[in-house]
Amino acid sequence: MIEQQLKYRVLTDNNNQTVFKSIRWKTNGDKSIYLVHRALVQQLNNKREGNANTKTRSEVRGGGKKPWKQKGTGRARAGSIRSPLWRGGGVIFGPKHKIYNIKLNRKERQLALKNIIYNKFNNTIVVQQFLTHIQKPSTKLLLESIKNLGVPINRDINILIITTSKDKNLYLSKRNVQNVDLIDASQLNTIALLKANYLIITSNALDTINKTYNA
Image (cartoon, rainbow, N blue to C red; front, side):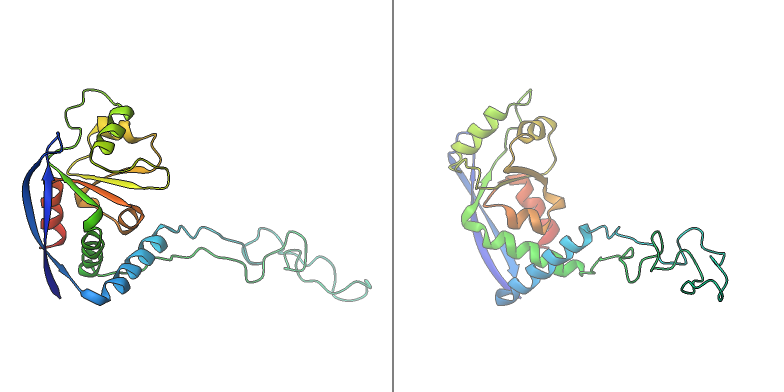
């Protein structure tokens, strides 16, 4: 385990530099890519429902009676109308319901999240508070606030806003902006962090992250 100290500049609403907040991140150096990959695969697999399901000949309704006698009809012998060779019969080797969940240790997941946040230091902006004063939803105000922080507004650039709680007005303001996402600091996940080009974190959220994932 490697400990490295990073200094985050905390901005006020006017984007003036106020204080520096230092956090000692515990990372695992060169092995971080392996852990991040495992956490990503685990989250993607756990999202799979695995609902594809077909019925075998024993599960299809009907077919209990022999269609015709074994000999004397001139036809090929048949024992059930639900044979896989028949229309409406069972399926041979078809897909069945499957659980794709993968287990990942809690400390491994936390370490993967820490490594992602640590590596996004240069594209991380810490603010004292973010749009907590708005009385009603305003997408225009949201985009102006992001632009004032020096983050380019572009369809190809994904922005993740991390707060301590999901403010309703903030959520409604960002809802129709496809490349802006909002997440609670205690509910971080690998996909959201990897997808983001820029992180906007409130000061309280950074403390929560440090306490939850870096303790």
